[in-house]
Image 1 (cartoon, rainbow, N blue to C red):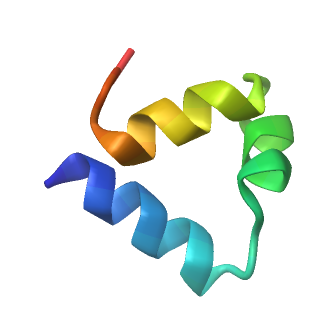
Image 2: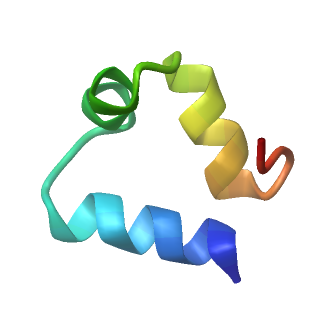
Length: 41
């Protein structure tokens, strides 16, 4: 599932949700929602 892949990728790179959010130019809550499968936009 996409949410699991996002979380696994982030952890494999040693990034926090905040660090990934900065790299993707989104807020941390967006990354959290992606990882929970709440929102995939």
